[in-house]
Length: 191
Image: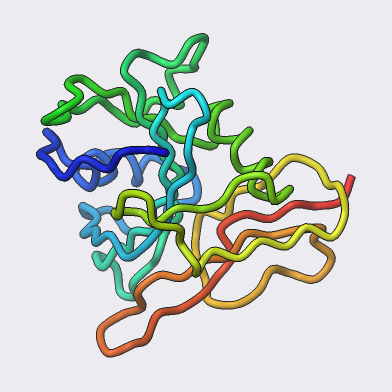
């Protein structure tokens, strides 16, 4: 089980994402700087205990309408072996663990393998910020052996499109005065 350290990060995850998000093809914001708030997410454990795995939901309030993004992240104590430069979001200093390399988890084989295990019911989803607590808001459906998981980057309330072989849904905080909302974080299409 991953240990959640409540400590300092320099820069913070949101500061790293503020620089990285506007460079992504699925980013819907304008030309200005994103105004990000963490609004939800969950974690999976790396069986080897070396890689932190987090599925973060962040809302950008910089545009005319808020947009919530799903950013799967991995945290490593060394650069990703054979990792492409495009996968690196940035580096930070963790107050307990020291230097960490933060990656777009969709390109990290450890995260992808754990999502596949989650879809098969082999591993549970954990709470984002509480040691040892499972996240009961994460729901998994896999109707048939499908292809590779596809990560939804812009979160919308509701279910997956018809015809998907599986999905992972979770909740996040909606805007001011809104209740928590549920949407699809991962889909699987039949082969």
